[in-house]
Amino acid sequence: MLINPMKNLLILGGGTAGTLMLNKLYKKLDASEWKLTVVDKDENHFYQPGFLFIPFGMYTKEQVVKKKKDFFPSGVQSIFAEVDRIEPDDNQVALVDGRVLDYDVLVVATGTIPRPDETEGLDGPLWYKQIFDFYTYEGTCKLADFLNTWEGGKLVINIAESIIKCPVAPLEFAFLADSYFTEKGMRDKVEIVYTTPLSGAFTKPVASEVLGNLLEEKNIRVVPDFYIERVENEAKKIVSYDGQEETFDLLVSIPVNMGDDMIERSEMSDDDDLNFIPTNKHTLRAIGHENIFVIGDATNVPASKAGSVAHFEGHVLLDNILSYIEGKPLEASFDGHANCFIETGFSKAALIDFNYTTEPLPGSFPLPAVGPMSLLKETRRNHFGKLFFEWVYWHMLLTGKPIPVSTHMSMVGKKVPEASASNGHAGDGADVPEPQPIEETLTH
Image 1: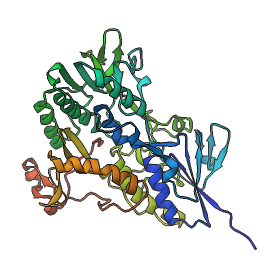
Image 2 (image 1 turned 60 degrees about the horizontal axis):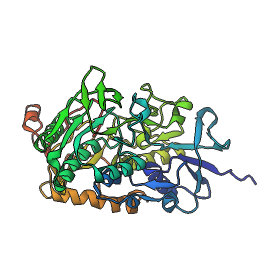
Image 3 (image 1 turned 90 degrees about the vertical axis):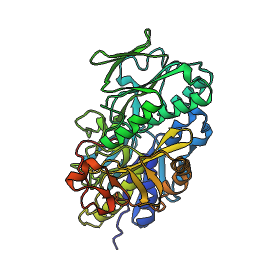
């Protein structure tokens, strides 16, 4: 009697996207047929949205750290080791320690990594002295210590590249800095400058106008089209490729974000040399590799690199992996859905909801008129929604439990501005037959 060998489903990355997929697949796959394995080099799981709050004393350093294994289901194999490369022709993954793992289906969820070394001088003598990031645990903790005793000066917030995870976080940092220094009674001692490679506060016209107005109201100077070339540590200034300069007393940097170096070693990187995997933006299958799927920040799909996107992708990816295993066409389709709370300071926040084809619009979410959340509007309810998301993250999102928000973006409750009325898009979004197309890359 022949016994069918166990098949292997391997997940690379035990962060947000990898953990939620691990839990979803564990509930659906037959344990007698499939062995589930997750590989990650770090045993700690960080609640990265909390990194934003640590410098301002809103979260403690301990609040954002838990053990990854606490969120892995029993019965799966977890390997804490560094991946050297994927060998797709052989259906294998090689680890740095020499071990080789076979797979029948591979899910890549290796995320993004801040790379200050990609900008000349950024990680020079002033790094973690007067130059900080808040996208890493070490960076945000050191920045918190610095701000606790800082007596003021010129704070420059610089975004090195437009493709970053949680693209609204730099704006949130600027808003929270304004609130923080105001409440400390020293706002008049701090000049806040926001330098960005974008042409405005945000990538999309409606949201950019709203957020740009907020920055102006809070006396935060925006320097658009600033593509940083280098940091001059001795002169304490940043210089753009076209010669613009901004001096600083404190530089908060959002460095270039890149995918894991093992993607380049695997010769699977995209054309931008940012180490993101070319991925079908609807099916989430790696282009050119029928048994490799990609989720979250590791993809090059034109959606935001954010936890909400990983959550929405997870539903689609689960269906498509199951379809692949059953030999069926991949019919589930991801529409680029993303939503995000934007902290605006003084216990208020805004909310945006959009996808590949529709930019953030004003209105109510998720229901028209009643909400309970307001889109593109500062409210205390949105702020408390942002804070409550921490509980949702640990108890529902990571564990793969259902969250009552539609996977695909809905126009219900959204209102298209008058400028679009001539195109047949006006009034309550529930009556809009087709969303206004937005073709360029989305970064919320």
